[in-house]
Length: 140
Length: 140
DNA sequence: GTGATTGCAAATCTTTTGCACTAAA
DNA sequence: TTTAGTGCAAAAGATTTGCAATCAC
Image (cartoon, rainbow over all chains, first blue to last red; front, side):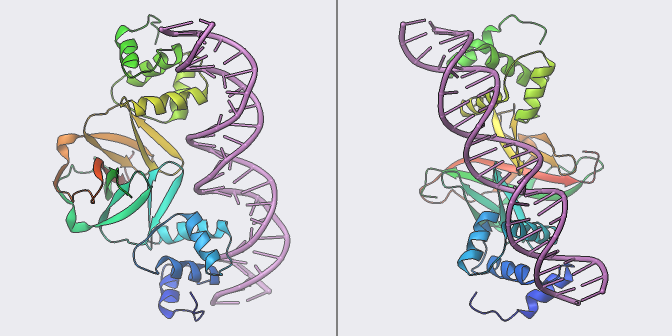
């Protein structure tokens, strides 16, 4: 985050989904997409922003996360009560959940194969399928 | 819940898992297992208790739900932030989640077949696999 | 300019906790 | 008795909201 030059691509991406590329949204988007796929809570992202010297309020972090999620730039995941994670990977994939540490980890889409799936009940359409493999006992 | 006679089987079940069969726990256990498989939040169960003229505090409902879950009598499910559901079905099965209404519905175990599953990362053991099929657009 | 966005603080909601009181064994 | 369990009210967290100030266009 040393580089303050606005990233064209990010700006376009935000504009494309109807969000003004504000200083805060750009900074958060950059933080989110640094260093590969991540699973961050609002609080964690807020902390990262602080660490990166980006001044942004927690309320704005929540706003941005929800707007990004609505725009398909993020995916929200809830495994435990009282804490949402936002996944920067919006491709088809699933998760390991380390119960002891509360950490999430991506599983590439191919590594889980659903051989049979019931069809959505009449009048509904499939939104998505979440597979969460809960493991415990390790170092997380 | 008209019948106030303590149910032997329930009493034994609670004792078996090390929980004293108190008036509150018995009443809640009965409510939970009335009418087949259900997915209730603490608030909903508390409301049902009120409706059934069972005097029990919300804190006790939370306590009981967590104790029952720890004892394997219930299963906790979290799909949206800010609300846990407790599933009276502890058999192997998965769920439909109606995004519009927030309702959960059981899918019998056989109707979802996982043909391939990665093994738990080194040092961890499988705790359980949750499959949540999210659907939207219907009446929920 | 003008309307979207932000920050702050207060409000909300779910869940947990501390502790005196009550009930089961 | 003795110890677990309960109720209440307060506390704790996560998230949302209201609204004036600020920023993008």
